[in-house]
Length: 293
Length: 272
Image (tube, rainbow over all chains, first blue to last red; front, side, top):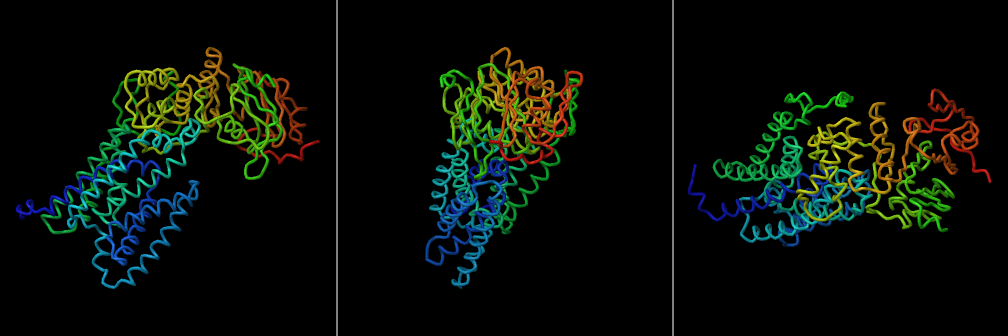
């Protein structure tokens, strides 16, 4: 529609923030699906909304409010839900209490409605240069921490019994990862808002793991999908003036559906002895391996 | 006790409590290096707990434990561990080769960039257990028997002196049971590794084991299979009539299920 828009700083800032967020959520997402932490992501984001509402109430920046609330919630979930079975209950309890507070804050602060809307559905086209710099710092800190714990965290996420036996500090890694997740949630809230957080933290990783069983390739694909949907979403929004988060969620969902369609062919589980190409990723429940010996 | 210095595994007057409930009490048991011992007992008898004590993941309430003369600690590279079978999510982006590699370096900090020696060693282990054909398959899409072989490769890749196996034959058909037992027995014979093997059926390992450790709630007994797996011993141990039949080289235990499926009657109070 209007190519001149590309010269405006707010577009550049949106794209920069988008790239930072996409990389961060693309790397963190596979851990969320691997550790079945979808509910935790949702909980962190919703309590982030309360943080934003509270911050506005005391005249602070909503972004800082989201960050603080997500970190506090991550620690609360970590302390209350030490055992896996208790985790969802702890998240539910913390989330409900947090949202209750959010309702109170909204009521107390009557001229809040527009800002509430932007926290719920994203504000990427309104980010300032300061926001971009803050995003970059948060991303560098979080991704550096993740790089340090990357291998043992994968081990602990997939195979906790053996990881514990091998001396991996499971509890410590869970706590550190919750904090990293809180930081990723804070970044993603800026792009897609509280309510659509999973469109960056779960859907791309879910699509990626449908396409490959190679963990490194899966993470790379997850980042690429996050970049495509975020930058694509911003671009589409600029040309149509429809909301960014709508496009991001739609593109993300479309890629996920596509991955489910073609995935089984790409994730062929093994080379068959007869060297016939296998088209099905499904392995029958019973053992068919006897003939190999 | 001087045996504590040289034995592969030593437990002295060891008692474990979980949630205030005694799991087993006053267990004194020593394994010589290279010994193959089967652990049997009903649900909740503390078979897995015993392995966790040796892994340094469960503290003793009283008594002491040593692994090769050292107090148990997590991360002991001399121990290989095959955990109880638990399925993986079929969509998980983790291949058989990743699981095996973690047995070697999964505990190290940083990002895994496996080249050369490690990758070669992983391939070697996958071939050893006959899992080479599905090295790149998602672990969640392997059958139970295939996963167990990958588990064995994961446990063996660190070249352990002590192998702790928790029901590695669970839900496997006879063919796969045999394959897994062969792999572990071979490691036991050729490498001289000590093996502690939790099983609910003694028959697949009957010809391999040196001794059987029977846990029965608070009580326990140990000895060669022929000594321990008798009607008299089991009846005394469980405080309920148990018949042991020998049939074509197989042992059939009637009246008490020593496995993880059916509950044994709760044990009577410990005789003084």
